[in-house]
Length: 124
Image (tube, rainbow, N blue to C red; front, side, top):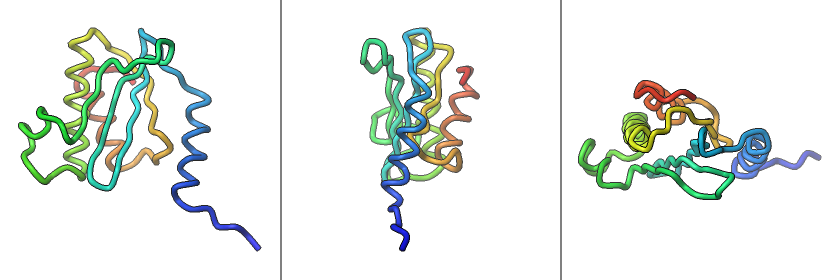
């Protein structure tokens, strides 16, 4: 019989496969995305130093000022998080990033976040 792999385990396998191929530097940090059932998180990571350069979530002040309360888990929320992150990155002089989708399919919220970052002028 075949052993059925859960969605969580399958994502972990995809995440490990993606992370073996990409790494962030200070000139081109890694844009890592995580989504839970209610919120979406994105951060720019310099893997050589092991530090976070900028981050944005659908929990933060900047997000609530733009969207309001309660709308934290749809594509529009992901787009706003991408815009906030791009603004913070540009303020720090970051213009290029490596995109780490963390095992999620490049579809829906993940694609909306990436497109919003690109629209603000950051090269992925």
